[in-house]
Amino acid sequence: MSFLNQLKQQAQALQTRQGDELQYLDANTEATEAACKTVWHYFMELPRQLNVIEPAAVGLSLDGKSTWPAMKQADFRFDARKKTLRGKEVFDYLALGWRLEPAEATALVAAGLPKGRVSVNFPPDLERVERRLRAGQVRHDRQELRHPETNRLQAIVFEHDMAARASVRVTPDHDHGSFDVRLAAVGGLEIAGTRYAVAQLNTAALDELAKLIVGQPSRFI
Image (tube, rainbow, N blue to C red):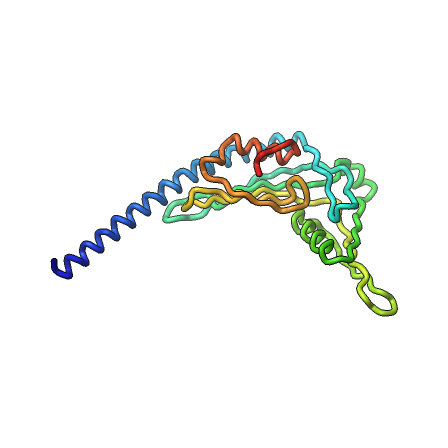
């Protein structure tokens, strides 16, 4: 066999392998997009119901000691964006976002919304509070308390709004046929994540997500 024929065989084998890989990717993309449409329809309908119900939020706390007043979840909104992948338009992400606010917000606004105040003086406590502030996008001011004579740092005080934001973001991985789900301030001021295969992210799984949002027992994570 001539060297040219050897090169032809190598090229043909490579083309066959590339074609198989492309078919695999296309099949994953098609299945992922079908699951995205299931999420899209669910996320379109869910906010309409939750904006009427305004479910209670679980007890919130930045330091695990001082608790916030009774809170509700309101102003649920859905957003989805697309991108181009291998010449096709596909979903980039699908997301829900909403507010966590005092259950008696109307009365509190009339009287002036109260501020929360948390003081920490140990690094683990500081990291925990700062993590929870970020998770809930809680607006706050930070102040350092120092000893008047030695100027030694005694504590860090956070004065914060009694309000936060929560979200769920579903990001498809079309090549691998899976979804990354990021939950911020869902069931508490923390960030959590999980991964679902395309076949798993169905209406039953989304029902479990809805249960998690409203504070019912859930198997979503």
